[in-house]
Length: 191
Image 1 (tube, one colour):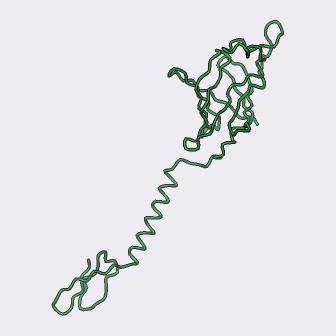
Image 2 (cartoon, rainbow, N blue to C red; image 1 turned 30 degrees about the horizontal axis):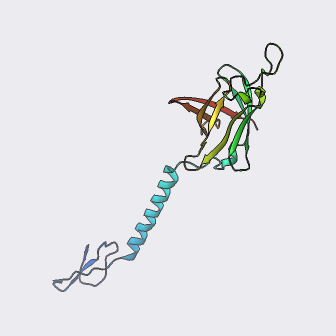
Image 3 (cartoon, one colour; image 1 turned 180 degrees about the vertical axis):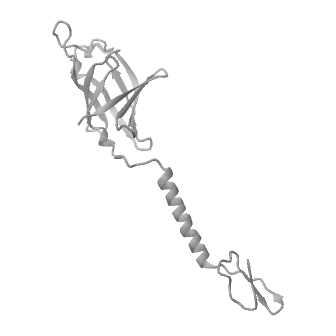
């Protein structure tokens, strides 16, 4: 509130109104000064815009679910060099399949097979044609892929899987979990 003397004019930044002095009588007149509220609403809009731009997770990376499609290189803990091809299936989910293994042949010169697979019908699949996962779905809220299991041919086990791109390195992080035990691998995109 602003006290003004002898005239009917309003103060420039009065919040609830002005109090004009007329003769010796004090009168209270509630007049809302519009420019003040316009100024405040512009400042609030600007403040909220800056807040949302800074505090909401960065979407500077390509937010497309299909960015997972491509060829990846993985060097296992045992030092084995492999390549995995991730493709999009007609139903909109994704599949990952081994397409190259550095040491494809065993000691006898035969192609290594998926001998540890719990499904006996798949034990004759060559090591460079093993399907690691199928039915992977993108979750836009979490900015990651999940919803299926990944197969580990070294151990013959299937585990729940989550995949996301690391913001710093750009590598695809692949995390498998089974009975509360998790293991994460970094896949490097090569095409």
